[in-house]
Image (cartoon, rainbow, N blue to C red; front, top):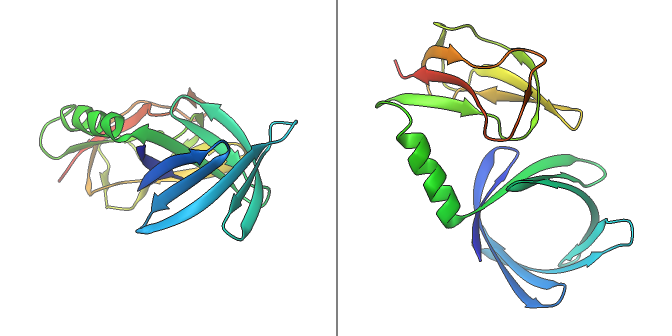
Length: 170
């Protein structure tokens, strides 16, 4: 099955095919990797990907999970290609031409809002900081624009995909 997978907010096309119990082939970036996955008694997944081996603690929620690899923690959101296309169409129809929103890529707590309504922002400028699993993630402007509406406050808890702010292109 093919998925649109976001890892820490960056989107990738990934295909996963089960070839036997606990055995998969993952395809991404024009390459394939054989995977062997074993669930341990404590819930940890032991994963062998070619010559690489690692253990992962996974804390799932709707469409995604926090993955603790010991040395690093990542947020992964996986949607089928149909679900991803539906979401993109919904987001595109949410506003007029040039309008955009910043959504929370994961559930967490708003640490700070770095802009005010009416502010002119540059593409890549920091807008909101979200804390999840004791990691702070600065969400940046996908385009230049003017902030129309801020829908969150510091200390507020948000769910994955919650709209944090809306803007219009300059």
